[in-house]
Length: 612
Image (tube, rainbow, N blue to C red; front, side, top):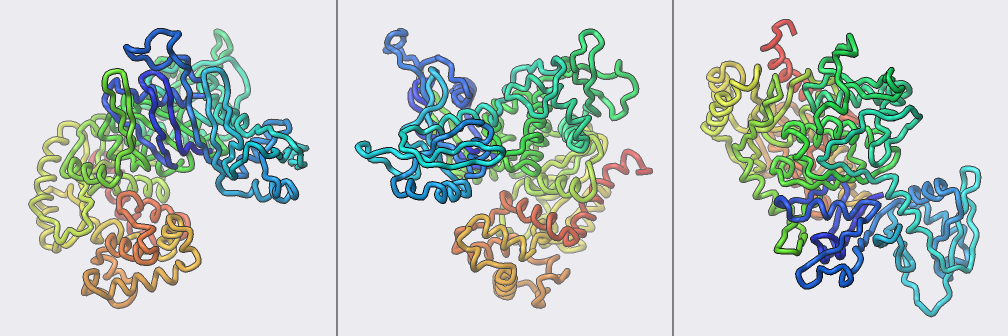
């Protein structure tokens, strides 16, 4: 299930929010403090509180209406089928008169649909309702007869029969799914580290059964539990391990946090309820998304309020790379969150007097502003909790390098982070100015020296000559490393992956875009200016050519040409797709990049432990 549109009427500071659109992936709600970001998110909760919008003209209770919310959600037919089975009772789906004639065949096709839009509304009085028909697949004329398909669960299957009936129970199914598959996390301290004994394989939306779920994971799904612990270590370098024990005082289950990986005596650990707010929030959040067997809606209010900036980046990296199937709606006023989250949508909340308003921001314009803000920009807060910092070229490498390392090598050494020094975002750079690199290195080396034990820097080669690189590395005392190829995308020229990317953005091109057509387009573009380089010999697998080609622009050109500009390639947003595809289908292609990233990690580790 995915929320595609929401509208809030008469709730707290919102008289009428208007339609607010959402996409899959990460959706940001941004704005200053006290403008209504949290109010908007609270209006999405399963229970809508009776807190009507007030103005000086209308503040007496008898003059106020009841708050309402209107949602459009999207679900697959298979998900709706699962909702029917979970309900355990007959469900009625509106159909037209022609569909009624062969209702069994129609419902079989319905349950195979990839997307069904469902419109529902809710007030403080109860659960979801909707105008007829809620599924929005046809328009009903009020004066005509209503027909329904009755879907009844029957021993793990569903039987279908027609019925002349005007009911529509789909909003009720959405309500049940909304309660089950929507999780809300705020900056408030969560007292969820202890719970009575009981069997729970799935987290409740309020996380009250977290100890029970973690206990089941550790005893029955050990691999998932260990992956959770690895995520927590990556986000919080001060956390070494997690355990769940039975408290001797009351037989309750209790989550314990260990500062080291070693777990020698329970007295050396701490109750989760005594740990920082962010630790319990993140453990609950990751437990929720890692134990779900369907796509969920995850709402996080003011993520930067309970997490250190470096922890925010680490969490967002995990969500973007490992758990992309879920939809995230996150409120923030932190530029670091906006910069690093690669959002699908951004909405700005403003407040004037008693009225809050919300408007979408153009992602292209946001991207331009973000580039300017990030150019040579450094958030030194990233490194306070780190022992080893690897400064990389930009947000793409910051996201992809640790992901590649974890997929092909294993967990990063504790206290090791990747963070970007600049976001050039410029496919058209003719030549990296050595003076800029010197300036970046000089400023960072001075600033970081007192904060961390070990530092390394990784820059793109671009068109620097070997003598220029050698001099820079010598001046940097061995801390400066250059990517062996021109830039990161030189490792992503894979026709199969590029074809998959194009068809994912533009399904209509699936009939014409194949690995073969992509390979042909790559060769054609590589042979012509401005993408031609002297090393081109007609072979897109040539190492010499891959070292020098402007791969980012080449991929961008081919994607635009083959899709008629319907599947544009953006380095920062889309390189991860290609990397993930290659890792899944042809990881050997990434061996040179793997070795380079491994050498960066080895460089910062060896400065601390020469035997490593």
